[in-house]
Length: 290
Length: 140
Figure 1 (cartoon, chains in turn brown, green):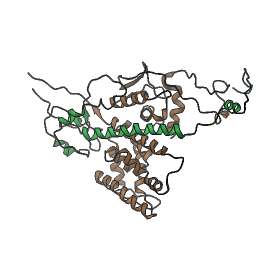
Figure 2 (figure 1 turned 90 degrees about the vertical axis):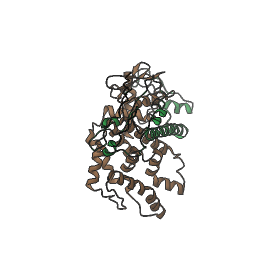
Figure 3 (figure 1 turned 180 degrees about the horizontal axis):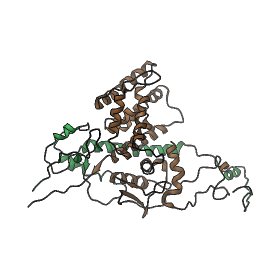
Figure 4 (figure 1 turned 180 degrees about the vertical axis):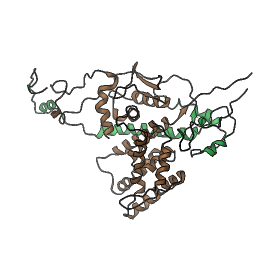
C-alpha cells in the first residue's frame, strides 16, 4: 500500500516533466499549501487525461511508451523502457483506458514497471529472493487453526492439495502446523526455492515478491507462476478464512468486495508481469533452397 | 526446401530450467504489425498457427533438462507450450481488467468523497471566505 502512495505523490510532479499547473488546492493560498493544513485540505484533483493517443516505439534499451509524441517517464524521471513487447502493449493499454482523469491506483502494471526501473528501495536480486522466501515461515497455507472444526476441515481440503503439489513439484518438504510459531521449514527447502527463484531475472523477481506480499503466501505464488492455479483460485485460497466467515456471518456491510477486487487486480497484474518478463521472443527465418 | 531442425539446445525454449539457468519460458515469434493500444491479446501470435504445428504433447509442468532432450521432432515453427500458457495469460489478463473495472466502480459508488473544503463548508451556511490579496502574513 505504501507503494501506491509513493506513486500518487511523486507521479504528478515527475511524469513527462510537465509543469504542475492546475493541481493546487482550491483555497486562496500560495502555490504550496502550508504543511499544517495538509491534513485538512481536500485531496488534490487528479490529473486529467492530457493525451489522445498512446503508442509504442522501440528504443535501444527496450520498448518505450509514447503519450502523444512525448515519452513516458518513471517517477524518478528515467525513461520508461520495458524489455518485452507484450508488456509494453499492456502498459499502453492501461494508459489508453484512462478516461477523463488518470487513476494511478488502477495502473498496476505501470506501477510494477516503475518499481523495477527505479528500484527506490535499492534491493538487489538476493534481497528480493530472501524477502520472498522469508514469507515461507509464515505462509498462509501452512498456518492452520484448531477450531472451529468446519474451518479446520476446509483448510485441510483446500490447502493440503496445494502444499502437496508444491512438495512434489520441487521435491521439498513444507508441511503445515497449528502452532503459533508457524511451520518449521527445513533448510533444504529454502535452498531449493532460493535456487529456483534465482533463475528468474530481476524484473520477474520484483513481480514475484509483489505477488507474495499480496497473497501472503509463497506456496500460492509458486502455484500461480507455474500455471497450477488461476488468479481467482489463488486469491480465494489466500482469503479462505475470510470467505468462510463471510459465508457464515455475511459480509461487512460497507465492504462490498472492495478489497477482494483490489487483491485480484494486484495479483493478476503481478502474475502477468512475471510471465511477461520471463519470456523472450525471437524470429528465425526459414532457409529456402530452390 | 530445408526446414529448420528444432534446436535441441536450451535457448530455443527461452532458457534452461535447471537451477542456475535463466528464464524457462518458451520463445514465441511475433508477427510484424503496427500497434494500437487495445490489441494486446490478438498480437500475441496467431493461436491457430501454434496449434497446427504442435507435434509434441502438451505438458503442464516445466520441462526439465531430460525432457528437453527428447524433443527431436522437426518442425517449421518454434515449439512452445503456447496453448496452456497463452490461455493462462489470457485468463489472467481478463481477471485483471475485470477486477480493475469492478474496483473502480465500487470506489466511485461507495467510497468516501473526503472532507469538504473550507469554502464549501462556509457556503453551506451562506457565508463566504474573506479575500486577502497579499495572503496572510505568517504563511510562506
